[in-house]
Structure formats: C-alpha cells, structure tokens
Image (cartoon, rainbow, N blue to C red):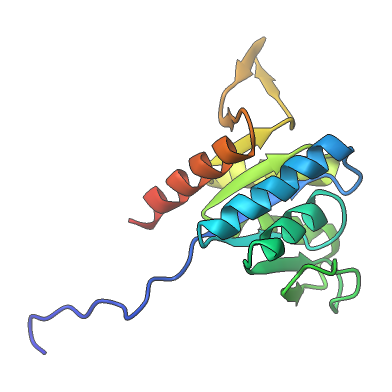
Length: 171
C-alpha cells in the first residue's frame, strides 16, 4: 500500500453543541425544539448539558426527527438526564463540565441562557469555537457590541450557520 492513502470507510457525523437556559421561556423552548429537529434532519448529532429547559427541548426535537443526542452530565451517573438523551456521559465535574460541553462540538448554538450558558460561551469564545446566538447573551467591548457571537434570525438560520462553521473546521 505504498503511496496509497486510505480514505475512512465512513465520515463521522458533525456534532453541534446546543447551550441554553434550564428555565427558559416557552418561545425559547420552541426555538430549541426546532433547532433539534433541523439538526437531526441534516444528520448532525446534538450535544448538550443533558438536563432541562433548552437542553431537553433540543433533544426532544432531535429525537422527533430520528436524531441522536448526547448529554454531558454534571454528576457521577446519568441521574437528571432528560428523557430524550440517548447517550448520557457522567463527568462528576459539576458545573466544570461546561468546559466539555463547549469544546465537544464543531460549533455552538446558544439559545437564551443564564450563568451556566455564560460560562459555556466563555469557554467556546476562548477556544475559538464558532458560536451562533438566538436570543442569548450579548457582549460589549469599549461601548461597541462584540460580534464574535453571530446572530441568527431563527432556528433554520442558526442550524445552517452552525453546520457551515462545523464543516469548515473539519477540513
């Protein structure tokens, strides 16, 4: 096989991290559900913190479209995983697991969010992970909006942007 480069038999699916509030309002839960549906329809794996709110809604959307979901859990077991998580990964790290959540996907979609989401945004921004935002945190630097988080108009726009970013990072 000298000089022959073997191609992988199958290309791994893209993993998109979805972060957001555990106590989100209904409009954000609806958007998260739509994001999950659209990601699964395109063959992406949904990765999140695995618990309630945006995490549960995105997983439900993905499952309703036949997709695969992964939850990075804060505890030593899968206790607290929402009913739509296929693979629950216990970390025993508590909120420090946010670093794993933020770093595990090819891109991040942020919907709503409180301080846990803020920490995940910080990890993602620090690592240069592309982030698409829907009704989430905005940052100011020297009185101007920091545009590092790309804003999306709706769930479909967020999914298309995140998948484009994640695919570009693969090559």
